[in-house]
Each structure stands twice: as C-alpha cells, then as structure tokens.
Amino acid sequence: MKFREIFVFVLGKTPQVVTETLYCLMHRDPPILPDEIHVLTTVEGERLMRQGLLEEGHLEGLFRDYGYDPLAPEHFHVVVFTDDKGRPLQDIRTTEDNERVGDFITSFIQRLSQKPEVRLHCSLAGGRKTMGFYLGMALSLFGRPWDRLYHVLVPPELESRPDFYYPLPGSTTIRDAVQLAELPFVRLREKVTLAGRSFKEMVADGQKAVDLATFQSRVRLDLGQGRLFIGDKEVSLPPVQLALYRLLLLQKTKGCSRPERPYCGDCTDCFLPLAELSGPEPYREILKGLLALYGPRSGQVERFRAKWEPLGGVSQEVLLQYISKINRALGEAGVKGAFYAISAVGRPRQRRYGVIVDRSLIEIQ
Image (cartoon, rainbow, N blue to C red):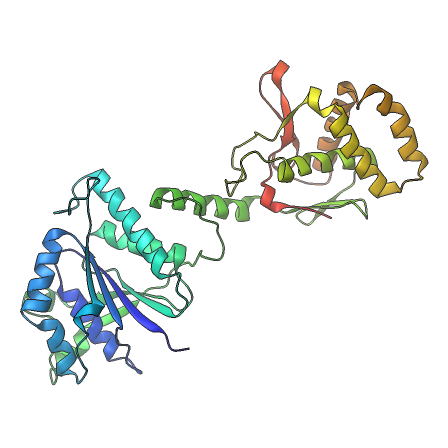
C-alpha cells in the first residue's frame, strides 16, 4: 500500500528544522516526500516560520533545488496553540498553557492516526522540550508500526547560523553534516484502552494497563472441570467454595456499576455486604454453580438445597468460614498478592466482600 506521507512538526523559534528534516528525508532511498505538512506552534513561532520558510522562499527553494515540485500551499498547514479563552498563545508560559498544548498535540496525533493510509513523520526538533516530549508520548500512545519519529542533528557551527536552512546542491561537506536520527518508541496503541480525554488522563490509563499486565495474573475458572487457575497456578477448592468464588468473580464482571471505566483500579463498588451475600439471589447463583459441577440429580446438590433453601440463603457465619478457607487455599497454592483473595472493605458493621483483581483479567467457562 502506498502511504499518504504526513509530516508533523512542533515548532518554537527555529523554522530551519522543517527544511533540514525534509532535506534528509528526500535524500533517502527511496526518497520520502510530504503529501502534507502540519506545523504546530505559537504566535512567535508562526511569525518566524512564515518569514523564513514562506516569505524568504526557503521551503520552495528546497524542493526546486533538488528537482521536486514544491508542495502546494493548500497542503501546508499551520496551527497556532490557543489558551483557555481561544486566544492564540504568544508563548508557553504557564502550567495551564503547557497542559493545553499537551492535550492539543495528543488529540491531533490521535486524529491523524485513525487513517490507516496515512504514515506519520513526526519531528521532535525545533520546539520547546515539553512540546517534543508531548509529541513523542502522543506517538507512543497512538502510533502504528509504520509511523516514524525523528530528530535532526546539525553541527553547532551551522545551528548558530540563522541563514542556514538546508545544504545547497554541491556542498558535499555540509550535506554530510546534516543527519536525521530515527528514534524508536514504545507502541502502546494495541496494548491499552484509553478512555481519558486529556493527556494526563490518557497517561494514567496507559499506566494502569501496564500495571495490570505486569502485576496481575489472569484468573480462569473452568466450572465444567471444577478447576481454578490464577496465572499458571492451580487452586484446589471444594465445590461449594469454588461456586462461592465464582459468584464473586461474576459480581466483578457482570455486577459492575461503572462499566464506563476501562479498569477497576481501586473501585470496590461491586463488593457485597455479608447480609446480601447470604440472601436468596447469591444462594441461587451458588446453587447454579453446584449444578454445573455435579449435574441436576446429584445428592450433593440436593443436600445443599435442603439445608439452605428453607433459610433463604447460606448463613453469614458459614459464608465467613468459606471465605477464610478460600483465602487459605489460595495461599497454600502459592498465589501471592491481595488481588485474588476475597477482601473485606468498610467498617466492621458495614463490611463488603469481593475480589480486587481487574475484571478484564477474569475468564469464566
């Protein structure tokens, strides 16, 4: 597939990085030429860019000097950052300005990366350090395998010359001095779910996904086989305890009151009070688990039904005994961490019970 090549620059007061980067890419084999250029900058950055690249003609000159048709004006886009009142930013001076710039760069890259036919070429050079950081992080969050991140390298004697925009044809020494470093970046696009709208929220979402992948193991309960696995460890539980643990896993996956949240985090809203756990609905769910384990004609099922159905559910005292035994079995199986044990939250008389493991890691068969 032939990509539509889109170049993105974050620009401060050195518009030369645009032509220097273009120069390096057009000298690749095969050459990479832009179908569109997007420059994200401040009011002062726009003034310097228009003066150097457009009014003085260095952008058009680069293309003509090396035998290419200049980029059509409608494919050269300049976006000036704005403050919270929609006014163009003269400079990035405050924390609020900085956050707005980060949000804009992130959403800009997110939007462009939604088009599979587009290949992004993003340059870190030329802007404030925070602008380059935001651009690199945005590409890490949304970049595809074919997107690219660059930093142009120019020797100090050329970097200090305001009239230097690119090596002219025939200037062999200078030509070799301007180099383009392609920077690797971690691609998280297919690995994390990003529900946040701001840069800060997206980073928090990404961190939660990394934490889940690193610190929490998958929980798999195969009711037909009567087996429970946490990561690569099998936990042996008697049928009633396995059915109770299944109930709490189901409460985590199907009883979630905040489904809009991609990760559970420290939310315990799905945890149930002991009085509710000993009620008729949880009893029926435990019974359903036992039926799946034993079959409808099992004497074990009938004895469980005869004991607890007249009382409307399993007693709180017995439930606490089961919870204690389940947690002990988890420890004996070598399962570490509080993610998988049945935890209690709240004050003594208002305690609620559940499992902390993230619902996305629970698999019930």
